[in-house]
Length: 481
Image (cartoon, rainbow, N blue to C red):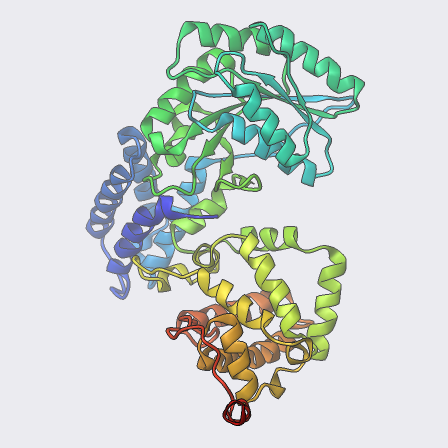
């Protein structure tokens, strides 16, 4: 998941904690000064003034109660206290959907125009499909032009049927008929895509209230745009007063907005964020876990989310086969290519590194990682013969020239790839049979090598033309001709 949203806040808090590191013991005045800095950082992140003030008061009370001023490692204890208070600020959250038997379970999606509501319906359907559910979407947004067409297009992309009725404006009737159709066609979840407006008005709220009353949904989710900041929180408050929301889905979580809405919405509305949209792809919908978000804000990483993302890319059989190959040292470049392709589906390299504990603090604020480098590595591997991928040690000078020409990279890049793959294969052999904790430690070491440029070759691409370089033998043949 892209995590630019909290970058600024994370950097500010990291600097504040570093400021007390190494002091040995600190005073109550130091704690008070730190709270003023944290409050300023929260306000700059667009957190509501009352929420920021209350948060800092609670942290200060906890800090003095825990006798931070008497500990030899005050920065570590302060990080823990701030982490726990952030979790409390955003939680508790239970993102599980209460499925009913017999079905269908009805989920009502509400929100203003432009919040990403219709796309979120499709993302939710995609996620439910992956959980062995049989969802159906209902086009109950009869006000916005082309809303039905958009939902049907998304339905085709996800493989989820869409119930729609054209030619009238009765959203309650369409919703009821859609639920009835779901029962007849053995669909166990119905997702209602309701109407939105550019702003909250009585007509919108009246229609949503009637649909909710007629359909008795098991969950009512409000979809709000994280980029609207505190306006998103005000929207959530207004909707909750009329609909009694079960939770919030925050979209555009991958944006570079300041993140105040994510930290504020639970405290202001009393309703938790249950899901977050983390990108444009239909797979980019995740459950919201306050402890993981707090860990990322404080630079602790989020290894659990990374593991879950990886598990989604592998079947049990694939994991077992890979484990067996790793244990025997038979991991080939073909296997490595498969890993690269699955890794690219998980998101950008920078975002994945940020989820590894200890890595966030090592990455400069302005650091740019070229994900196109993975494309060039893939091209180099595809330029190899099956035998070369099986045994890269046979790749000599002439083979390197051929591979480099085919991939459009430098010969030294191919040589570096072969050498670093050999190192990686040995490390993966050592990982086989290790516990998850041991693998996490080794994975962190591998990531730190990557940060220093030792674990992966830096492909720059060939700066020369793509003209084929002739061997001595070919040049002799040409002279004879």
